[in-house]
Length: 288
Image 1 (cartoon, helix red, strand yellow):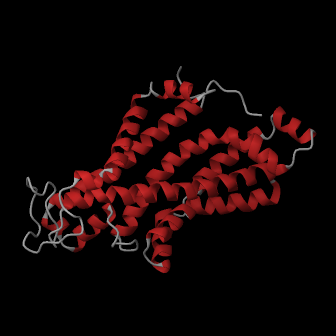
Image 2 (tube, rainbow, N blue to C red):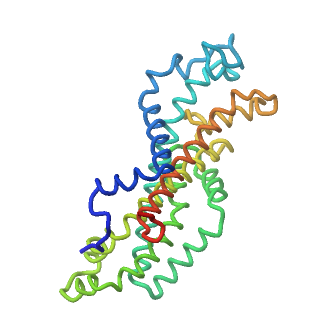
Image 3 (cartoon, rainbow, N blue to C red):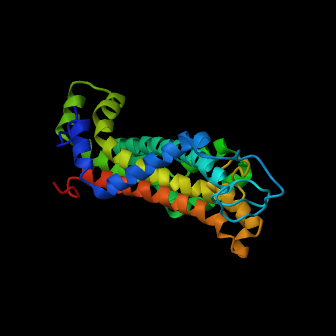
């Protein structure tokens, strides 16, 4: 049994979501970036891996829209292909973070007692310690790879989701439909999966959008600092080589401005979507 809400179907949800101008703006930006990632081979003019020593650090032109880097690679192609890695890492790391956070939040809120104390003190630790610092340290230990980055980011950024989910579970588990499920002999796992989890999923989805934005920024920061994989084409990789080549200090803006703008724009888009979802799913914030 689920808590009755005004959102009974996807169509009704979509009708409400469309009313949010900020939410629609964020969704459109995300869709554009997804299309860029999918259509990368068709909207670029040069192979991103191709180098040309005769065309080093060229400013933007009709042949090289974003100029070239220190080995003559097309920065426009690198930025377009970099969208793929950023989205892949962002979504997969967010899935890991949300899965871990939701599992811990459900367990902590439902069982309570000593288990709740242990899990929440662990959650508090990860909330207090800056996650990016831990990501850099662990990333340096495990070595640079995309898989490592996904796991590191996901396993070190689950705490906000766990805290929010636990708060909801504490309220939901006292409701009559949960008591009725217990009365007819339903097990704890059945109650958690069939009765409580569906009612916390709206908050989980809202938190996931924010987790994606956190993962995108974290991965770019890790690669920029050299603890991520600088061999994979990503926005963080472009910024890393812009710094090591001296382009930042030399004022070669075409090298570092585009990836920086793309990172901030995509993060901002996910924040807008997350804010809009929170407004929709939280009756106190929704204005109908």
